[in-house]
Length: 268
Length: 286
Image 1 (cartoon, chains in turn brown, red):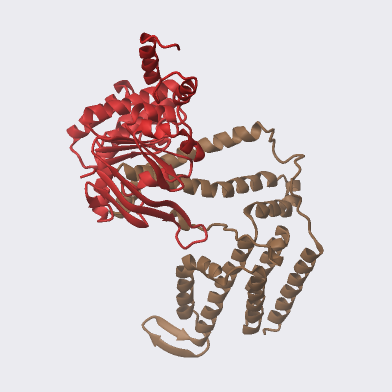
Image 2: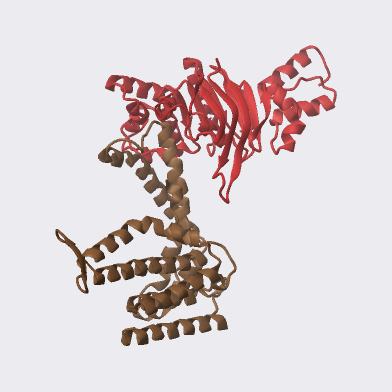
């Protein structure tokens, strides 16, 4: 069960999108999300979908991998669709039953909402699928660098994030080991009432926390013994550099967003 | 009827996926009641995967595992019972301790067996006695103990289930020589007192040579040698070819034979000592 978690999973590759600077990808994802919230019509949604399909094709990520990521969110998507279907009033009434009223406007909004959520998720998945967690945190740190002037501990935040990402697989492995050891002593994590099952998790969680703290301690000592003292004066092994392709991509996305805004203005 | 029997046991991790790997291939082993078996093999040779099949934590992707003649694949209920019959002590078992007190932690297994309070108490004290956990620390938190005491407490937690088969995966890893010695002695004592079958996974040829009466050597997911220690260690060349070694004493005995001192193949210090003493008595030059 624990092996199914695909948080921040990276699909190695060498496509145009893989080679883009993580900052470019972050900025473009944010622009894309902004455009998604501006769009209101079939034409603008069509343009956004086209852009997404194009990006997926360029990234050479299998579409099945992206759809797999949507699966856990199916409930939220369906719930949103139903809520919108029946609670948006306007346009022609199609039928009424008890408190439910289906209108043409409701169908349209539900349709857009579902597409908006799916495209939002797929777009962000494309970012994490094509960028290593380390590159992503490095990119984030550089983007937030100006906040350092406001005394925001940007370096510390990004260091915490990369450590957290680094330890997810380790902790999953550890949890697997401990749960096997407790199962060997007759612990039962799978059957019983909900309260019993919650109680049965204790033998798993306590050792997991103990070992997480132990690891944190050891890591801190290891970092300090290599003279880590925060971000001040720290240089990087891999310097991120924006190439021409990055600037062109960002420019293209800005123009795209501007286009969507203009189209929305004329309510197209 | 053998206590444990595997028939063409095969295990493939994530079959069909991009990370597919065969950990065990066609393993046929019979282990009789009361045997003391040492499992040796290189890292990644399949030992740990093998022992997790013995109590049904892992299910074979091919072949069968029989416990007292019954297939472990039979039912979930049978596998649950099998966990109490086959006590498995994992590597670094001290990381599994979770209760507030040592006593409660040792009693976790027996409590899962739904035994009576008195019976649990008897078993906890008995198990603690076997591995040398003094009663004074029963009310301490397991987290306050020293490394060696934690390891003992964790082993007691498995012994308290009074398993008919005790399986230990590297029980001496990371302990000092004295700690190793005494844990191995505890295991022998448990076997002597209860007549249990013991399966010990180890890297240390010295340890395993001294206490096991049968050795099974794993290589690349299958059994490559199976026999009495003297049989296994007499083929030093084969052991070295799969990245293992023989005990130092066996090496010394072999070197002595090269120098024409007629000593037999030995694998413990005591054996070589006795052989040399008897030679000396016969007046041989050594």
